[in-house]
Amino acid sequence: MAEMITMKERMRREQVAMKEQVPSVRIHNFNEVPLGYSKEEAIYEAQRCLQCKKPSCMRGCPAEIDIPSFIRYIVEEDFGKAYLTILETDALPAVTGRVCPQEEQCQKECVLNKQGKPIAIGRLERFVADWARENDIHGKGSHDGKKELKVAIIGSGPAGLTCAADLIKMGYQVVLFEALHKPGGVLVYGIPEFRLPKAIVEYEVSEIKKLGVEVICNEVIGATKKVEDLKEEFDAIFLANGAGAPRFMNIPGENLNDVYSANEFLTRSNLMKAYLFPEYDTPIKVRKRAATIGAGNVAMDAARTALRLGAEKSYIVYRRSRKEVPARVEEVHHAEEEGIIFHFLTLPVRILGDQKGEVIGMECIKMKLGEPDQSGRRSPIPIDNSNFILEVDMVIDAIGTMANPIIARSAKGVEVNQWGYFKVDEQTKMTTCEGIFAGGDIVRGSATVISAVGDGKIAARSIDTFLSSGKSLRNNIDKNNREK
Image (cartoon, rainbow, N blue to C red):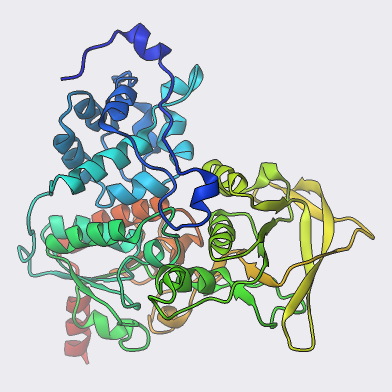
């Protein structure tokens, strides 16, 4: 049992840093960059927690984790109980412990922010989840078959997996449809191995399957089956198919060879394991000088992946300043450590090609910041006569994604907004069609994993409320057929 420490000592302690791979080594491999806490480091960090009577940290957690309780169990060295506490509300603790932006969520609300650094909640969550996996600690067994009511979930990303886990625990029969050959959504195709090892995603998906969730891969809803068909088989539907359509800048030269969308580039590397060529025969042709357009987490992932796949120079080109960068501070820091070169206040206007149709450069213009736009960020304005050529031979567009319309076209009565995202009631996540719910990126556009987790939890509760009231999509179909 760890020693008890005084409140004064808790306040005096510094946050425990997490050890990482050395930059000069990690740029040559795809192994995870942060190495995790040791048992001793986790206990030391957990002892900093003040165990507030009204824990503000929980207000910032979309996964609704009982943060003080799981941290207290770490102090008591009951790591198994800490894991089970997290698992009560978060079905993906090893994932959220790694990729959740805790600095903008739970840790931002921690009272220790007022005089130092907050509790490293994410690092402690990762430690607990990893310890449980390594020590064969599992949650409760199968929950399937208690109720006859069936729910279909479209998409096996964080929103779909969370909703599935919560609903199966409520006793519903849950079938999860995934278009790709592996479940996990953006967790497997979008986030690189060095940030989120795929073995961890596979493990947490397998734990959800053990609860009784049926997962059907290679099922493209909207093509192989229509949403209307599912209404005849299921009592409620949750649309969590993500926003997987790539977005381009629509500038001259984007049709040249070696211009990728970040979606294609990262999917081929992550899901199709191009980084393990020739063991996996899905190579990506990476040139010597790669430019990634954008500065979100996806852009950082793409630029750092290009470096590991052989680029001698990897650039981030962003039209705003460093202050406006949307990526996590940690991801920007890791990118800079690895030698990624940042061009701030720079906007590409044309990609140049040779006679073979291959990229030989990118014309850019320098920008300055004007008045704030609708999002509150200052709008970038071109500076006259500031054009220059950036010598690159490969370009990756990482400026965001769009909604894929294939599901919307097959879902009668489900309205979309001007960008193609499903319209929902923010309190319930129900769409404009009663009994059909939606959440994650297909509702809000590209966002964080943890916001999708939060949507999945809200949707699960709303589906339970809907079905508990005696309503059902199947009942509506039967009723309409009888009336005909």
